Length: 269
Ligand SMILES: O=C(O)c1ccccc1NCC(=O)[C@H](O)[C@H](O)COP(=O)(O)O
Image (cartoon, rainbow, N blue to C red; front, top):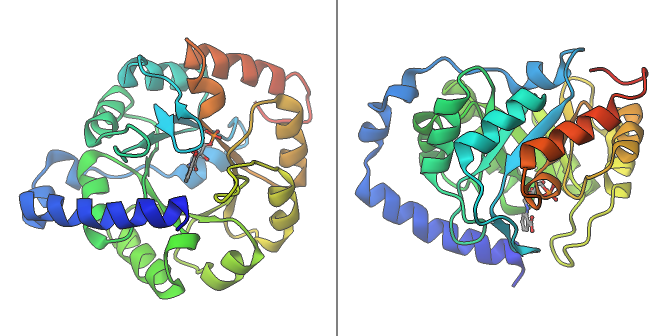
């Protein structure tokens, strides 16, 4: 059993429990459910954008505890002030220490910035939650969904006004799961069996992703030189969590990385 199998098995139990506690109609009545969403795709592709999707991540299966003290509103507001184009907030509790309240607090603190609900989506109910809690986009992970599920969930997300980031780990997942109803394609550099990260995965896959999608490289990123290489290879955006969250001041770590990244005129600021 891989870590992803474990997470998904737990997720199905959780979703069933939450659905029993909070019916869909109650989610639909929450104030943010009707809020017009912001485009993450535009935010990363804007020529003035750093393209950075800055993640609030307390713990992870690969690293254990990363940050037990950071406040979500302060950190995400700091990320935005430092230059994050989009925010990513984990809402998975058992494996990542995130909560729905984290997403809601990030939303309240950052009304003008697109926010990704970072979780393991297996059910339409979670899309409704994402909308009700203030997200603008959701993650669909090809490794834990069938192509039909990706297609159905992405269409349902679109109907709710949510954008979709489709995450792939290899050519097979990309070729099988890519559909026109996703907006951004993320290549995850983390091998979920060994937890090792290699940007070679992103560099190998980038040309296979059609230009109609925003291209995001994810995981294991921490230095400006690698970001420049990935930008030149064709990536619009960078999903980065641990490199910021492992410091005592995640927003300051982001500001430093942006400063180093933008030292060259070849890269947008
Ligand atoms: O981060 C993990 O250990 C992990 C393990 C199993 C499934 C997913 C996992 N991470 C999710 C992510 O996509 C990352 O949080 C995201 O790409 C940021 O990565 P990083 O900058 O390395 O924190």
